[in-house]
Amino acid sequence: MNPVSSSRRLLAYGLLLLVPTLLAGLGAVQLLRREQARLAERETYAGEARLAAVTARAGLITEGVELLVTDVQSALLDTLAGLPAADLAGELALWQEENPLVRSAFALSPAGAVRQLSPAGEAGQAVRRRLAALVAAGLPWEPTSAPAAQPPAAAREESVVRGLASANVAKMQAARQDARNLAQSREYRRAEQEVSARLAAPAAAEASGHGVADEFALPTPADSRGWTEVNHEGRRSLIGWVARPAAGEVRGLELEPAELIARLAGVLPAETGAGEGYALRDERGRIVYQAGWVPRADTPALQVPLAGPVFAGWEVVAFLEAPAARGSGAGFYAVGLLLVGLFTATILGGGALLLLQARRSEREAAQKTSFVANVSHEFKTPLTTIRLYAELLAQGRVPDPRRRDDYLGTIGRETERLARLVGNVLDFSRLEQGRKKYAREEFDLGGFLAGLLDTHEPRLQEVGLALRRELPAAPVPVVADRDAVGQIVLNLLDNAAKYAATGGEVTVTLAGRPGGGREIRVADRGPGVPAAHHTRIFEKFHRVDDSLTAEKSGTGLGLSIAGQLARGLGGSLRCADNPGGGAVFILHLP
Image (cartoon, rainbow, N blue to C red; front, top):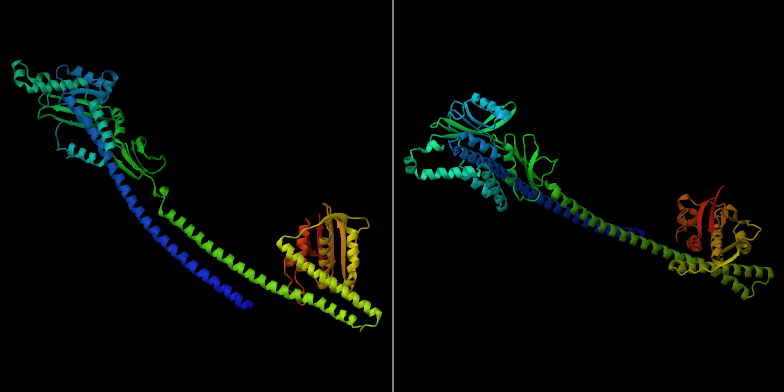
């Protein structure tokens, strides 16, 4: 087979595999990019929609807080206006003691002079100072300008209800009802009922000789009410008042914010979306109440300040889990790209392995072809010699007895050579198929090597090699396969006779190893083996590519068989540089 055409064919196969695979991979990457862009766009829209929903809900929470405050303020002022005029001081004291929303209650003259005040003592003195600061800042019940227009309470409540889920509506309405119930105690509801009854029977009231205004402080169209913030001595107070010009009095109360704050939890939603949360933070940035996903360290996605003096500096904050933490198109693209890369690499790797295997198969086929040719040549040479000498002897054309003996010796040596070649081929086949069996026995390795060298020394001398022996005189017992050891040593000697004949000598040494076992060394003075080939020369069909090995015929199996036999015996065979030049093969037997 032409190696150039074979290489071109493998290159064509590689290109046919590489180009479509790369094109398919690039197409898949482009599709992944488009899908990533689509997912990113969808996530952007989803993020904007979530942010809009969170913004709307935070605004609804803010309006809910304002509605709660409005309910409490309106109920407190209604109750304050409905207090009986008779024993007003006692009613104010009782109200201040019973209602936790009322920090203090008082009655003033239109000019701001204190007439009744609850509580008394040092707390009352502090209230007087705050009232003095209120009067000094200007009487808030004296109209100076029209109040700012506020949306009707009913309209605001309808807006909040429409924006909340049913569970959140129920929770918020319960919180507002609780605040209204707290702002109006039982005693003052009864007073309002009595006021209604008197209004329903004005004639009876006039017949009794007493006006309604003498017993109850009923609101009139001229009454005014409101809430004013007072900052005094570093303390902020919220004061509500009801001014009755006709009665010549101003009733007021100071709100207790702590009780109002305690009821703000009901304003937060009972149900939140996944990955979102809401919290109320005071003026110091501390979270008072929270609902849903509220991390401690994250920056809120939205901050809505609360209006009005009650919760000045407070804000509703909303948290939204980042889309990256919940999965995004980038993750899909990364996973898809990884899968495409693995798929492409698998195809290319599999194709490369197939091409390598094909190349290896072609190389092995070429080696086997060369092996068959070499074996045929190796078999042909001794067969030709044997046939030639046998014919001469058979025809009686060699009358000289000495020459006849030489011919017979040559026929014997060529027969042994042929037997070794056949043995190598058979052993190679058995080793490749894993059918090689070893007959282990104990024998004297030194005596065995001496007899083996005696038999083959003439053959080495014919090629110009002087055989040197370094064998111990004492027996060297070993347990191994006698034939396998002999074949290893013969293959090493054949290798020396073929490639190291120019060195003039070959030395066989037997010695023990410090760690146990026996060591046989076959050293020559030939050209040696390059260091890069010290391991590769034991591969089948491998031959060092230089002029010496190129011009020598051979099967390329001798050292490979020797190495496999050494491993089969539990030992090893390696090649090293011989000090002074040449190569040394070291056989280790356990």
